[in-house]
Amino acid sequence: MAEHRQTGRDPGLVAFKQPAIEQNIYNQDGVTDVDKFVSVLNDRDGVQAEGSYAASPEAILDSLNQRKSVIVGVNAYEYYKVESNLEPNSGGHALLVTGAERQDNGRWQFTVNDPNQETPNFPVDGERLLPAWKAEGNLLITVEKRAGGQDGNPNNW
Image (cartoon, rainbow, N blue to C red; front, side, top):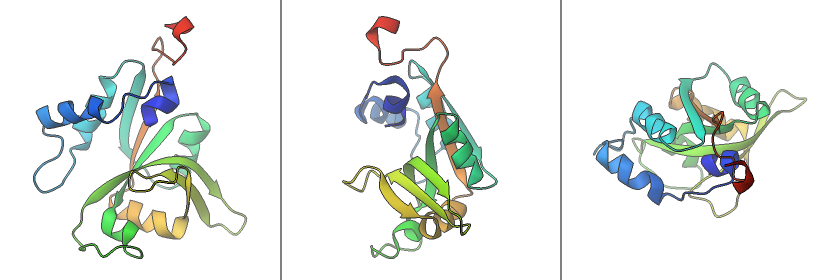
């Protein structure tokens, strides 16, 4: 989804599955090697990815305002604990954030694409997302169109 938003091309999960297996991005304990994950994204034609640990949700909003795709790492237990019966050590989960807004009352509202949700651009209250994001160290991966890369328009390739 992050690549599609930047280039107009959707490689599907299969484009990442084999490199993830070959590079041991996901270990047996369910931990994702973020640096390797970003490296696989950077191997894709037309996109540039960067991983960091953000100081605040403003970093999400700033990245979206720069037209970057934003992937956040959240603690699955914290994120799903109201709706699912997960173990507290459930591990991490990735969400594609498609919108962020700080409301007049200071609270945050987000829209996300969650691989576990059928509804795209699902609204998520900051009181749900932010503690789960903090539990994963405020992991933030941004994806943007690489200069000179393909942009989804065959006339520009």
